[in-house]
Length: 293
Picture (tube, rainbow, N blue to C red):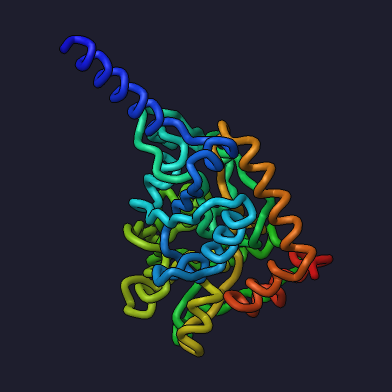
């Protein structure tokens, strides 16, 4: 009886340890499943079983000879912990690892912006999408788009000047976190929403606020979905990049993914996905796609 109890305790301990540690390439091949944790967002993950990142990650799983499994994240505030198995506290741009948490995925891929605090706790792969934070308003808003100066820093100053006295939507713990762009110093009334980034543009259309900051992918989707109802005021950030994220304990899986992405960017597969899900992206960011077939 004692042996059975000890065996049960050992099994529980091993299972608990496994739940808190992400696997590398050999572990995933042995398991036979690649777990793609992500958040339905823009055209990366539609929530209906498709999306740019869904298709790309399915192809990656196939290249590894394993089954693809999508795991919907609990949200932007927990997606990193679902990958690395540790809760994360972010303050003043610094990430602090806290207690253990269940690991739910092997890769985050949902239009995940490369941010300094995220780089402290995960490893980013080869960038798969360009990004920038824009200020968006309703088309009938008295706030006018800036006149670009060909200097991003100057354009940001001009754009932020338009926020004074206005209500501006943002979302903490995402790439729209107001602290990343010092929005408090603009004289705007910053309103932090919760929920999904897809809801920011509709909130402005519903007059919940005068303006919203929005990243490029969501802005492109919104401008296409609500043609003539929204306008871009100007940039709030320098140019950024989006990429899949991996645990720092999975260097072989990261290397395999980078090799896979490089292949797709040279055989036409990647650009075909861009044209399918973000047909205007190459027009706004031609330098990012330069040299790809």
